[in-house]
Amino acid sequence: MRSVIDIPDLSPAEIDELIDTAQDIIDHPAAYADRCRGKKLATLFFEPSTRTRLSFEAAMYELGGAVLSVTDAASSSASKGESVADTAKVISCYADIIAMRHPKEGAALVAANNATVPVINAGDGGHCHPTQTLADLFTIFREKGGFSGLTVGLCGDLKFGRTVHSLINALSRYDGMNFVLISPEELKLPSYVKEESLKARGLPYRQTTSLEDAMPSLDVLYMTRVQRERFFNEEDYLRLKDSYILTPQKLAAAKSDLCIMHPLPRVNEISVAVDRDPRACYFKQVLYGKYMRMALILKLLAEAAI
Amino acid sequence: MNIDSIHTGIVIDHITAGRSMKLYDLLNLGSLDCSVAIIQNAVSRKMGRKDIIKIDADIPLNFDVIGFVDPGATVNVIRDGKLAEKRTIPMPEYLVNVIRCKNPRCITTTEQELDHIFRLTDPKHEIYRCIYCETKAN
Image 1 (cartoon, rainbow over the protein chains, first blue to last red):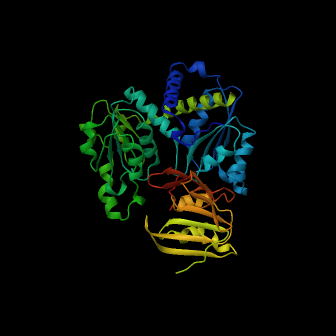
Image 2: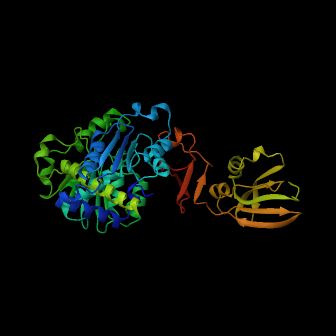
Image 3: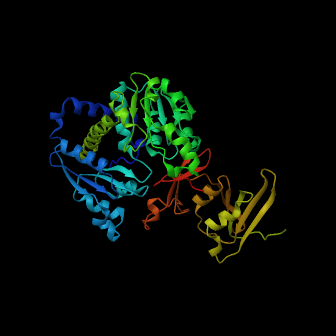
């Protein structure tokens, strides 16, 4: 049974196919309104993530399907000690497809290995969150018309940010990408990500600590939060925290068609004043995520029916 | 130093010097009731120094452990005083229940019945990663 646990589970051709489907959903929503009639999506969220859960549920409702939801681990059998494997087997009896979030890394793979219906990983701890990456890819595609020749800046916590690692991995499968890695020294992109994604594919990248220096060259700016708890000492955090807050002043040097993205939730890393800038795409990113989840649900259900 | 020759048993040869104790532990050779000899830092024309393990019984061995700890080590099976079989052990693609994932956030820490499975992700650098959380094996 085909499941999606991490982005490499999907080939570039399949991602292109999902993008095509998502585009078509936007253009012809009525044609998809009944495509999942009679099908049920189970959203198993063993840790809270209201936005991701609602995105999956909205996606299924817009396809005409129904939703079974577990939103609180304390009210599920997991609180009685049921294993993820058993939960997946049981829920497979009720639902046609499962979207699962779990605090433990690898939980989605365990579910997929035991379920008899497709499983979509909706986040397993700090490990993978493939539908966030699909949302990011579709946002770039919609806003920039494709991927080739783009210079993508990734800013903030590049060391621990799973969305950044996954996005770099996904984008590095396209030709002609350039990357600018903007972070404090303490939070630089891990060398294994550079080795496996950028160097392995011979893609150009440069590292800098200055958002201002990088700004004029960027077509896409992907912001993430620099968290206090990632620093060994408070002084370093206080010295650096404002450098990575995006403000209208810093955007003065940016291209007029820059695409500003953020996986959300935002805390203070993008000034609210930036929201009024037409280059701010982070709320559209949320909407695009729903369309990509619709496309993924359709694809996995279609494959399961064969 | 003399170690008696084996009539029926196994000689794990060409072990990189210093790795024999790790092999001894992971192969659980301490639980055997036959003689086991560990020779460390033996002179080797090819390797300079090497370790050797001699087991005085023809027991089933987990070759994946040998391939993981020291790919390139050779296993010689001796029967009736003669070399019956000789093979070099490559790195296995998967390791099942040989080592445990040390990541406290990994699902294997809470789901006790799960096998601990590592996959060879980078043969050049001999890197194995947990299939669940992708944490690198030590």
